Image (cartoon, rainbow, N blue to C red; front, side, top):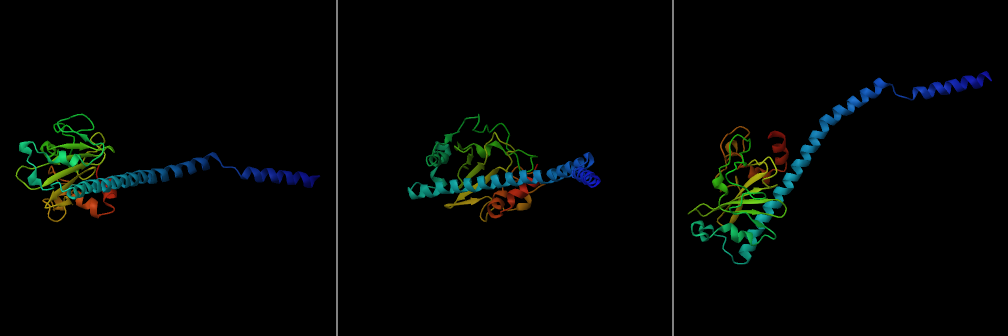
Length: 237
């Protein structure tokens, strides 16, 4: 009988030792909290970077494909063929090759961009991108992407700004979710590529330069560097 009682008490003691004290639980929760505080922001940033990169590559492919279709249909891609002063706007021809696209010319409400609103800024957000860069046509795509055109008078080139997530979604920064492409001599290039006007990365993809087009060169980096969007998400606030 004594042996039975002793064994029973030993079992109760063993069961009691299987539990956790309040202090142990609090310590564990604290550790979990610290780990979450470290890992969750990184996971969110990585997911955001991955989404931006996917949108960038898709948009670049879409714009490039339109030029190829125009060429296949023997439609001129020569900017000199389009005279904005005579109302011959390049973007109108471009729009014909985009299914379900919205013509945003002169419109100011979402999904279109009011060029007087000063919502687009340079990479680090300390200067506005002037509205005259967006005054030669806008096209809103079904997926939320916004294309903004600059058709310089008497210059054989077309600039196409691509807002990956639309003007209603922040941060609206050149080189972050707004990228600049350059079409000249029958070739589409990301701004910053060889043969484009803005090839100085220390000025046009900088974390300190205040020029209004800081971020223009970043289109080249986004195209050529697989980790670019991780860099921009982590370094640009």
